[in-house]
Length: 330
Image 1 (cartoon, rainbow, N blue to C red):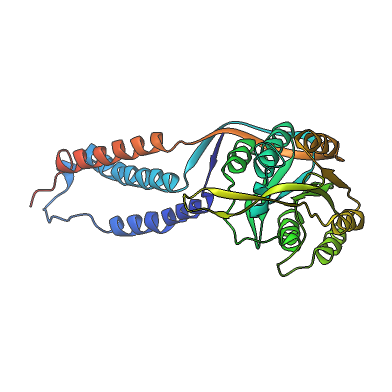
Image 2: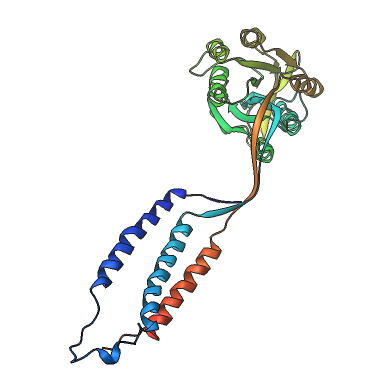
C-alpha cells in the first residue's frame, strides 16, 4: 500500500495547464517560411518524423516534472495497516526522587526497590498507555503517555536521585501527572503516586491537586514507602565522597495520602518492605480497564527511488535527443 507523506504537493500538477498552453501558443506560429515559385514539388511530402520527436520531448519534460513532484510528496510503502480493539487504561506513575528515597530500610534502598517493582509492573501492562512523572522539590514529566514499553523501561532504569531540586512536592507531582493524563483516550485514568515523606514544598497543595483530579475523573492510588519505626537516612557526603547515613524516625504523612486517595476514589497503601511493595503493585494491577481502538502499522519506508530513477532516465533522454537528433545548427 502506497501513501504520500506530503500529498499537498500534488497541487503542483496544476502547473501542467499553463505549461501546455504556453507550449501550444509558442509553436502555433513558429514555423519557418521560404518564398518559392511553386509548392507542387512538396505537395506529397509529409511532416518530418523529427517534428513529432520534437513535440514528444515536451511530453518527456512534463513527465520528468511529474516525477519530481511525486518525489516531493514522499511516497511511502506500508506493509500493513490494522485496527485492533483491546482493553487498556491510562496510567501515570509519579515517583518521588527526593534524597530520602535512598534510605536503607529496603534492599538496596527505597528508590531502587521502587524502580525494580515499577519495571515489573510496566512490563506486565502491555496494552496500557503509561507515562512517568518524577518529583522532588519540583516535578518533571519523564515520559508522556505511550504504549512503547521499551521506551518506558529504559527511562525508568535511567531515573536517578539528584536530577531535581531536593524536597517533596507531592501536590506538584500530582498536578503534572494530571496534565499528562487528562486528555487520554481511555475511560479509566489512574495516577500511582509513590512517596516516602510528607509535602514540604511546591506550588500546588496535595488536596487541591486531588480535587482537580476528581473533576477529571482520575483516580489516585497513593503508596507510602518506608518501614515502621526508624531507618538509615542519607544525611550528607563525607570527606571521601561517600554518602553518610544516620538512623532517624520514619515519617510519612499517611493522613494526607489517605485523603488524596479517598477524594479521587482510589486507595492508599503502606509498603513497609520490598515484598509488600510488590503486593501493592499486584493489587493495583487489577485496575478497571476499558476497550480501546489501537491503530497499528508496520514497516513504513520511503519509496521514492523508482521515481528518482525514472526522473534520471527522462532527463538523459532529453539531453541525448537535444544534442543528437534534435541538435540545432546555427
